[in-house]
Image 1 (cartoon, helix red, strand yellow):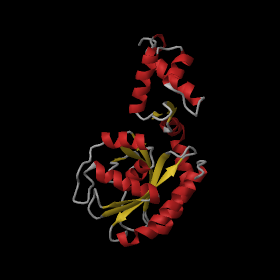
Image 2 (cartoon, rainbow, N blue to C red):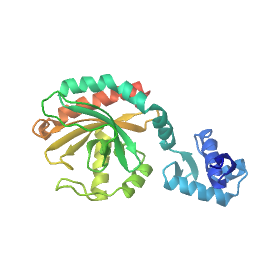
Image 3 (cartoon, one colour):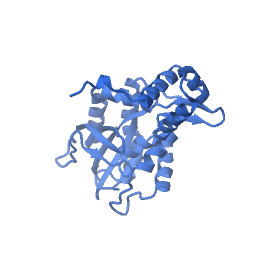
Image 4 (cartoon, rainbow, N blue to C red):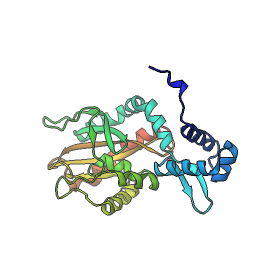
Amino acid sequence: MADPSKYSVPNLERALHVFELLSHHKEGLIVSQIAKKLEVPRNSIFRICGTLLDQGYVQYFRDTQQVTLTKKLFSIGYRALADDSIVQLAHDPMRALRDDSKETVLIGCLMDKEGAVLEELAGLHHFNFRVERGARFFLHCTAPGKAMLAHLSKAEQAKTVDNIELTRFNENTITTKLELIEQLDSIRESGIAYDFAEQIEGCHCIAAPVMDQYGYPVAAIWITGPSSRLPSSDFTTLGARVKQAADEISQLLGYQPE
């Protein structure tokens, strides 16, 4: 195999240089400033920033014309290094939540257009739901998926929602982007997401986001069980308990709410 170090992609190198430059200018830079500092044609920087904006890595402020990094890049690097650390830090709050609720408790993260289960603590009932580590889950019809989507930046949220397919599983499933966005706004206010048997009949879930030190939803924890044991009438009380556990993990990751 040829040595990959002998090959390079100029525009990719320029994009990486844009990342590095913006990381030193949290207040943001306009396109012409970036081009001047990197000694790269303005049109090239304009196209690169446009692509990064589409992918959710930068945000653009029309009033000042400044470009700044979003927290997506931080999250990618953090997940690459810290998935195991998140699970380790989450273990005690998850166990306490499992012991209180008696239901299965899980933690998962975003994986592009899906979610992925990082760890599971089986419930204490003879009958409980089991999900294998690494299992993928939909974002639009699951409590953890909605909990993480709701706490993305508006730009990244819109990009993600545009790219996911709103598959219908039953009459409870959200199938329009407008309805999903409205629910995400409500979830962002409360910090708690619910799954009203939107994918699996008779299965309810309650989730809350886990935030990193930058305020990015690097994960979500949730409880899942049959609707007979997790009735919607108990959602408020159980939701507060799930959010408490998620907040404990967030604090261990360095998150400080404003």
